Image (cartoon, rainbow, N blue to C red; front, side, top):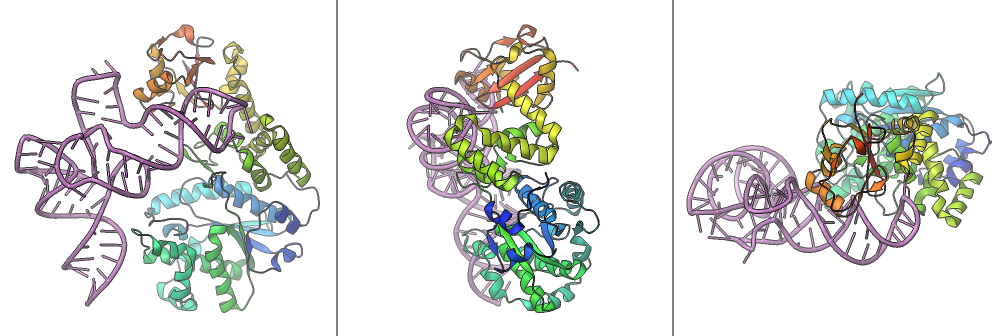
Length: 427
RNA sequence: GGGUCGGUGCCCGAGUGGCCAAAGGGAACUGGCUGUAAACCAGUCGCGCAAGCUUCGGAGGUUCAAAUCCUUCCCGGCCCA
């Protein structure tokens, strides 16, 4: 995982396409020099980080590997407010209990991606200062440095002014000041002089940079990364079922691997640059492979293997890859039980009720169809196979018996080309 | 607090007493072509095998009949104080 080649960090970030905007053109050169302290914030809006956050985690790690000190900031304070950016409507506030829960879970995840050793990295919670700052103190020390005029001009706020039926509460309007205050705190406490984030964070980051200049008369920097999007322009990391999470309980390693493996040709190269540690030569070779032999999906496989390993470890990645290989073989039914068992360990599974089920009922039980009608529709459209064999469109009501189960225990159901699930009997 | 406009299916959005399970678009799903891509083409897209049932912010009401009318409550936008 460590970059063995001594490529300057600025070069590294540039060829990977990770630099979107910088507050000062001199920043990249500085990154190749003496160690700086950098931070990126993560708000605990859910109890797990997702694929979108992973890019920021990767960036932190790249900074760290280049010798810089990194701070992962968990937004125990800002999470109470909610960033208005990128949203068309007001957020519903999290309760303090939910927030606490999310915070603990996310802090645990952050610690797995950045080295928190002394002098290497730090995990902080902005609740540490935000909960203890008085309102008057905040208004005088922070608010005084910004005019509403400039705050209103920020993209995150302006978009909420233009919306026909949306507005923005004073609460969310204040968010940028809180984030600016965070940066100031980290500057004072830890000498932090660089804040990173997605391009949607630009406005918030510059508030902090300005604040530090005005209050401390010091120069701090901001660096944003392009927003990761899919070929159709939508935000990356949202699957059909919602976000792709880093918590294996929410998104299994198998599901993560599958999501990555299905990356489009048009964007897989960008993802490899963003999310993996492959060298420029390797990535460009994979680009060529995609161009010349797209059907082999070598780039997608590399992406799925690397990122799954990064998030869940190499063993889980290998298992997910094996499960994919097995489950997408037409001969699944003829595999021996041991192979099947290991392959299925990661695939979505549900218990097989002892009584006979119709094909339609089995699909619902396995979670592949939301209702009986939907299940029947799928079968009649020819989109279902059981144990690798397509179900006749007229057979939705056929009762599956133990004779249909592989090794008497497994029912391998597949919807369409990609969606697989297993019903298994007994323990 | 006053005025005013609005809250429709995953999202946007039409519908203003029956012809409404509710137009249209997007998303999504299946099939075809492929490569477990993309694009494109076709079909599907509340629940139910069906008869039918349950939906249009919540609760009541008027009516043979309500997403559509009335009352009230909740939520949001804009303007005023």
